[in-house]
Image (tube, rainbow, N blue to C red):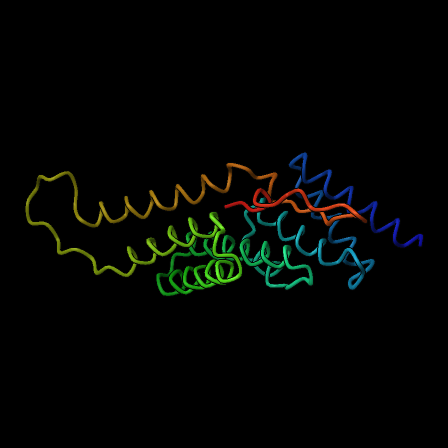
Length: 202
């Protein structure tokens, strides 16, 4: 019983730090919880929340590793798949190597598709799926032939890079829109999780 109270207290402290945007402190609390009780009742939530703290700090590969964990609760599993898609997409956007970038984006697309197979009405997954799909299409287009004229407002390559930058900017903007909603606290006895859609972020 003391261990249960201890785990609950550490989880609440981590969530409080997260809500105050003190992500390194939240990260330390969730890591402490996993170290003390790696397979305990709070471990699924601690793994998910640790992924969220890394995501909010821009540590997308580390966040991806946490979101690959598949918790027992169906709603948390859905959120993990969704956020894994987000983390892979953000890692892909930052990747310089085109082959690796496409691989990461295709993996992100797969995660959003998996979410939609479970819940075809998930609007966030539909939007992110479409953004990433279009980004992949743009990357796969052959480069336009070089322009021989001096006018025209820039080369085709400049325009292509502008499109890609615009997509990346939209993805990054969605990440910042509702950052605190990423956090998901496990439901307590007799209480339901009121988070719903707002527990996901891009």
